[in-house]
Length: 314
Length: 107
Image (cartoon, rainbow over all chains, first blue to last red; front, side, top):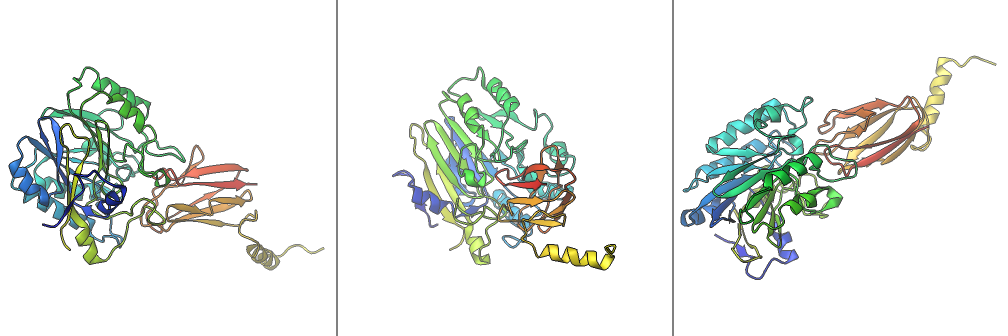
């Protein structure tokens, strides 16, 4: 396996940008001693999973089922490949989170196809919607499938393996000229949801659009994300997992680790590297080489991330 | 003084097309979406003008002017038209990518 470790000396901006060029399939997370620790994207995760005790979970994102444009004419096929890799893992994760844009155009058939493939992993899946999942006229297909038991536009929380998970919705009621949006109602709910939780409880927030400002010129950020982060101040371990930008990006601020996952459908350019954030067309052979793996390790009492990127080919 | 016949009216319309694109005139006008940008971002039109937006991106977009008009989701090469019957400034944006904004000034 080839790869390079960016972790030990910290992550320079240049190296982060290198990492962002890979498109992958999913990220496996494990929780040992209450601290989430990313073991990498599927393949490279296998060996680590076997060795690592504790609860592990998987993140996939941006499957865009229905997308058939030149950047990837068969987004359903690459989702199926990703699920195949999940099924090939020797140690099964406890569950999966999907950070939105399940479908490309919110068509019933796209949701059905996505479910048909994702369910083959035989894992519980906790979804949050992307803006591509709320496009049907009545905005009902996502809610009918995944909204049961959720609050407001679809936010909710649950506990697993000693970790408190919070699924947030930041793709509704977006304002002209603005970014992603959580809204006052959801923020009030979040504050209430976290009230009384022990500060030693590890918190995982997940939402589609990055909760931190990645690149506002392309709308890559959440207008009131900072207010959500105020509510998790004081917790010893906070992990923020997002999708939307179809590339790996991460940063650590104090006890908060931010991470965005790759898409299973198509890559998008690094911020400012193209005229727009639209799907990035690469040579067929390179697309496969970009379906890579990455591991992100959270080490207790360390603020720096260790990142290992490994392409599947080349 | 002759009544304007149908053929002469056609000539007048043809002449109008030759005027600069942003000149106010009750003809149909187009806005394209390329690379997550409305082009032109600002358009001046006469009352009665129909503006047609065409999405030329590989990603869906919408055209939304709060309280005024709202398109369905436009996939690649889909179009949305709106006829402006009242003067005013119509700010609009893409509800999926709200950093995309535009303006139609109707005189």
